[in-house]
Amino acid sequence: MGGAAKAAGPDHGDRACYSGAETAGQIRARRNRAVSTTTATKPLGVGDAAPDFTLKTIGLSEVKLRDYRGRHVVILFYPLDWTPG
Image (tube, rainbow, N blue to C red; front, side):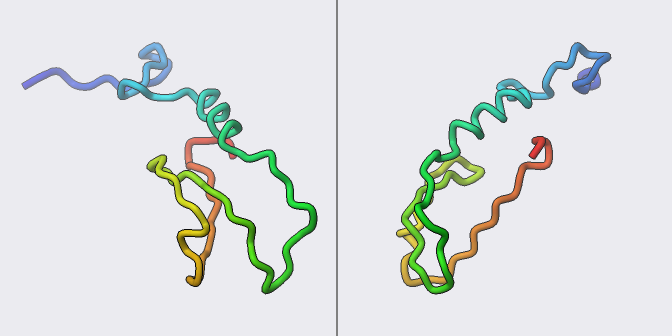
């Protein structure tokens, strides 16, 4: 059989385990580009209609709030485990 795979880390030149891996800096830059700079003029109250917006899923497909009109929606913002935040 083939040789053992080498793990990324200081002993291996900090190489990624797979091709195309992003560095933490690249992930932060991509995340910052994805954040909208639009600000609401006032906070929403209970029962107010939310403005339409588009978000990208972890699989990078786009999801629009309007696609869920008339349904209950819960939006969870969770940083990826390997990102700073």
